Image (cartoon, rainbow, N blue to C red; front, side, top):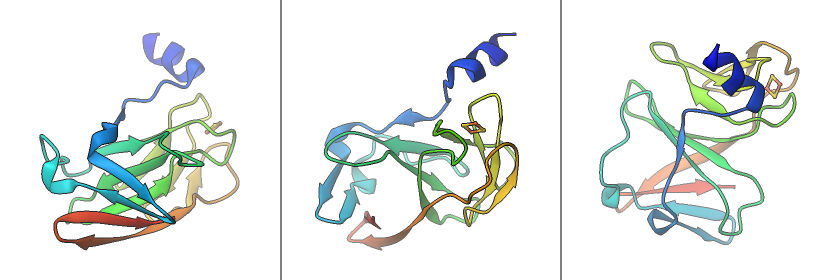
Length: 131
Ligand code: FES
């Protein structure tokens, strides 16, 4: 029951990353990966919001240790996304529960359009995300 209420309100499980661990530099976002108090778990995620970003960004670490970045906005109606435990899938936290693969392709649910994916590279231990 509580899960349904959370979905109704669009409350996601993924937490925001502290603003002192990332910065917006023109059309790039630098994430101070090496300064994070704990590394992201495999299939774990955080999101960035505010600080001049036009749209929240979801950052996740895959099972094979890659970092991916997506616009953290479901293409159905804009709710945030969570990684799905044990699957290589992102799921909208709203009741429509649209799902997307790691390339942003829509798999199921009410959304019709794919997610926007952002290029990610590593530089001096930081993640650089191109918007
Ligand atoms: S906002 Fe994601 S399914 Fe509706």
